[in-house]
Image 1: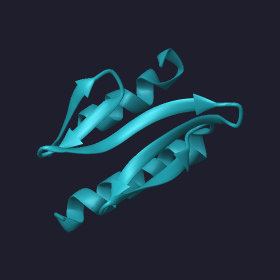
Image 2: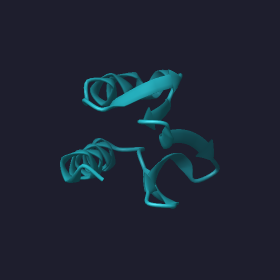
Image 3: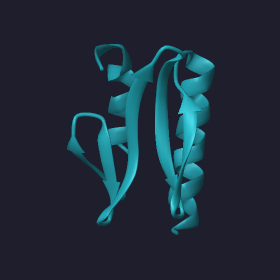
Image 4: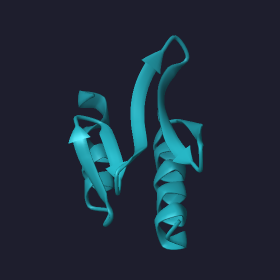
Length: 78
């Protein structure tokens, strides 16, 4: 998770979500976002209703896309 420290810091600043464990975020009482690594790289799984959507977070562009997606969900207030 060390390579994601800047990204995690930016996520922690978003209102309405709490980090329960390193890299595991909740929104209200529901799992919202977590990270994992597999042979294809590092990915974030973000809750979209009852499913999770996977976002690659290996480049600056991909990390910005994840932050934008987080902001859209938080702004929608779902």
